[in-house]
Length: 412
Image (cartoon, rainbow, N blue to C red):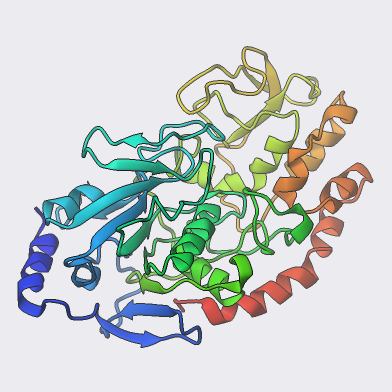
């Protein structure tokens, strides 16, 4: 086992039940940030995730029954540069894990988008797996029985419609209702370098958008949890007792390449960067690369003008996309895999596709408003508004959000 974990095991015997690091309260009394005083690192220093800072949270787990909300991204980097799964690492240190709670795509991250995830047993560890993406998206009191502390360690990508933050909401709510502290091991936001898009309107809240935030919110998962608490978005305004393990050497402009794909259809850094812009196509009759090896790096449809679009592809069933849109049909569109990195939303591709479709009446479907969080965006596109005109309409909401989120930030 890695030196870091061995060191942490020794700490158990040395310091027993000492609290984790140098703790101090935030303005929200239910949120405890676990930090330590360190000499500032050079700007080029490698980002160390919360999960990899084992010495900061292992004392909290001693003699506790633990529940873990995790998936394939819940990993710890060793000093040799390899990765071990958080669950495997904790089990090797005799931490008592009672259950694993699995979000969309499942604990091992292989289920399709939208595919029901079933309760079961993890074949590798024998642990019970409770689905957060099945008949119920919120764990019951019975499912939480005998759990003393819950851990949340999932890699997010910073987009409102990426459902891991919705699972976070329901986990926080269930923990608050059952008096269970929630330990969040923070991870980088690969789209944390910008904030953009329309603010979700409450009447359009759904599992792909639960909170009044922009499409790209620019916060880490731990910061987002603080905002959920601070804005009292949980049912009846209850608040969850949070314990946060920060990252080391992180800032919002720092590039971070994910070592494990966060879901089946986000295979690389380019897809993750394009995802907030191209996911709008999920609410249209345009395929966004599902059923190809360029997921969220291409878009196309049989209904787009093949004289205008000189790129084409044919979606086929594959792992993570068993039933891709327009399966087996030639789709005309664009390949964006070599495009420049985005630092804002790009709706030019969406607007252009609408203007170049031969089936405008069926271009949008009801899912589009859920993704946009407002009916106004579809209306603006149908009315012929330019992207700049649309973007201008977001600015008042974005400025208000920027001011609001400042109190929940953990990094400079």
